[in-house]
Image 1 (cartoon, helix red, strand yellow):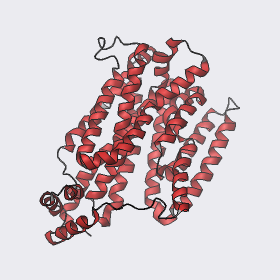
Image 2 (cartoon, one colour; image 1 turned 120 degrees about the vertical axis):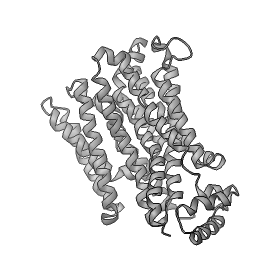
Image 3 (cartoon, helix red, strand yellow; image 1 turned 45 degrees about the horizontal axis):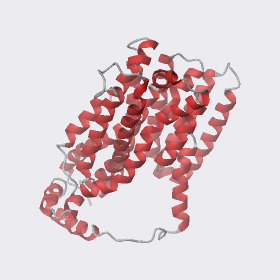
Image 4 (spheres, one colour; image 1 turned 90 degrees about the vertical axis):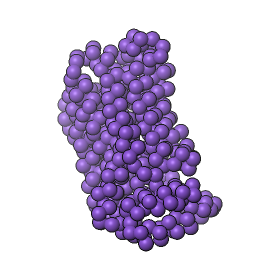
Length: 401
């Protein structure tokens, strides 16, 4: 079913607004990368823990957002049914806002802002957890909203906006972290600068929240709630009246929930799908996304250089994601997965061996870039599984020290 040509700009406009949820997904999960060292100095070092306990606690702090992702993903279906796709995204935006402010100022409501210390670590983790719920909800609701609003003939391209927005959000926050780190010295960064990195999310979260009030609810949800006239008004902005009426009928026929057997598509298909989601996390991408600056520091880079190198990682991630979107239908998903897996294995092995030599710092960076490129064009487009992501990020936190 094709939309009116005059409606294409309207479709892209509302889809782009919904895709801001994906941008915040990437922004919120990647903002931690620029703050890991500062969080360890500010919150964890004063506790006087052993090295192993220190590393484990840091991993838990970094991955706290992912615990919230699990919860957000689990409740997103219920939220979309009870509140609607649009209101669900508004709720996610509010959670992003609260998390940004709370992560930057975990002591607010207790002591004057700026006077908080390591004793507010629990509050910091709670606010990151809240942001994670927003991430989990947005990761589900944004593509659902876009898919339900986009005409079938361009749905694939429109939904890809969300994937691009996620990677772009990561790249943007790498730039933001680099800019903020340049505003002061190392002492300032460890005491105050990290707060500004988290607070910077207030800007995109506020923009997302503002524009959500100007997009309609999806026709499918409106029909589900017996608001067919409103659904028709939305559809008439996209289709001719006759086609809009036909779509209303089709939606009414499909909104009836039918239960089926879990393995109705075949046990191998279900198992392979689960394994793809699991191995997407086991390939080690969390090390790069969350600890890249710390890895580069361990290679000898100073903070500013490490953050600049992380920006390059973001560019590689975005570029090869775009490449995958435009080539996946020609090369095939299975072939891309195989090529990506072989490439990641090579670069990760090469990276591991490079750490045995102190003279291979630049070459090690090249290996990291190659690994990210292989992941972005292949496994990066597989479905994620936040529960595994949480445990692996905790584990990898110790490895990166």
